[in-house]
Image (cartoon, rainbow, N blue to C red):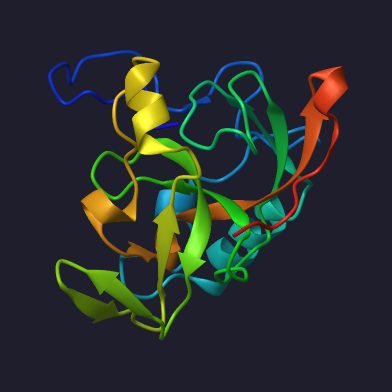
Length: 190
C-alpha cells in the first residue's frame, strides 16, 4: 500500500494507503473514533482515569471501516477492498495477522502483516534486531519486483522505518466487506 504512494521524490503526493473519506477509520456505529496515535495513555505520561475510560469506550463502539487505496499487500488485500478493523486490539496480534497502524515516519494510516512479535529476533542489516516488548515487525505482502514493474514503487514497511511501537497500532483487520466478489474473513498468512 505505501509502496505505490511513496516514491520519495514527491512528499506532497496524494493520500495514504487507506482512505479517510466516507469509508474511514470512524467506528461503524454512530460517532467518531479516537486518534489511535494519541489515544489514552500513549506518549504523554499519566492520563486521567475518566479520559482513559472514555477513550476505551469510544474504541469499543464497533469496528472501524477503511478503504484500501494502495497495492503493497497484494494479492491478499487489493486496492478497492473495504475492510473492517477491530479497534479494541491492545497488543500485537499473532504473526501473520493483518494490522492497520499509523506509520512511524508520517503518521498516515497503513496496513501490513505482522512478521515479528515482541521478543522476536529479526534479521536486519547483516545482523538481527531483538524486538522490545511493545514492538512488532510489519511487512508488505507484495513482491517488490512486481510493484516496481507495475509502477507502484518499492514497498514501505519495517525494512524502511524499523520496528513499530504498540501506540501506533490502530487495530487488526479481520473482514473484507467489499467488493462483493471478495467478501470474507482476512486469513493470517506467511
